[in-house]
Image 1: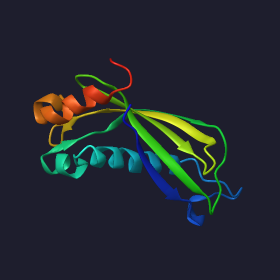
Image 2: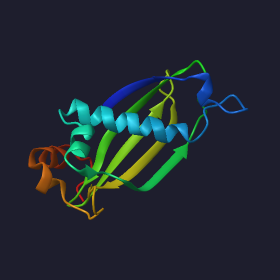
Image 3: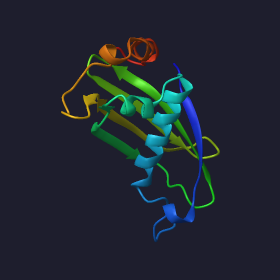
Length: 141
């Protein structure tokens, strides 16, 4: 399974009054992970947007396991969990430096035309990208 890894240095501004990373920051890290995965595969999300397409999140699930604190380094692992005609599900693990799982997550996305928000298949826009996602997906849809 192809997995992208990205390290995140935890900044003080990402923590809450309890001294742990505020839960919404995990969503930002997931976006960083997706972008890293796409780039490592040789594609760019910015290029997709420039061509008039967006990939909105239609479902998001995060399970928090162990708090991360300021000054630590988190590793975000990202992969394509499943990829179908219109939907792509990304999987994530966010890890402590020692490998302890801090959180697991999935995000489900569709691809839409920017001007109309009408869904469109990735295979119609970029067949090579679509084939790569089909090849590396963890679970066939």
